[in-house]
Image 1 (cartoon, helix red, strand yellow):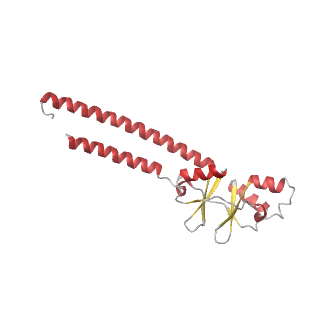
Image 2 (tube, one colour):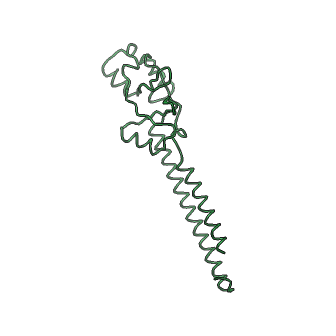
Image 3 (cartoon, helix red, strand yellow):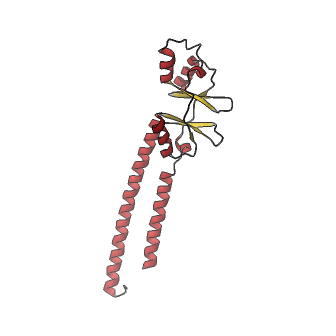
Length: 186
C-alpha cells in the first residue's frame, strides 16, 4: 500500500513541478517582438514613416554593430519636434533620441522585465543578447497580457491539482476502509 501511495504522490509532484516550471520559466526571449531599429542619422520624417509602416510605437537607435544608442517613441516626435516647430526633414534621430535606454538580457524573467518597466517608468524595454546587441523588444501591453495568461493558467493548474489530490485522497481512504474490513491493513 505505501509503495503505491508514494508512486501516486511522486507522480503528482512530478507533474506539478513540470507544469510550474513550464509556466514560470518563461523568459524575455519567449515573448519579445522583432525590434524596429534605425541609425542615428535618419531624418525624423523617415523614422516616422518606418514607425507608421511597421505599426510600432517606438524605434531603437543602433550603431552599425547593433549596439543600442537610444530610443524614439511617437511621443518623442510630437513633443521634441512637432511641438517645438522643428523641421522633421532636418532633425535626425540622434538629435531627439532618449539616450539612457533601460534594457534586459534575453534570458531575463518576466518579473525582471516588469521590474525594469516599473522602476524606470517605461513602457518598452529592448532585449539584448549576451554580447549586448539588440535582438528584440517587449512592450508593457504584451507583458501584461502574457502575465495575465500565465496567472490564469496557473490558477487552472492549481484547481486541477486540487481536484486530483482530492480524488487521490478519496481512493486512499476507500482502500484503507476495504483493507481494515478484510483485516489486511496495518
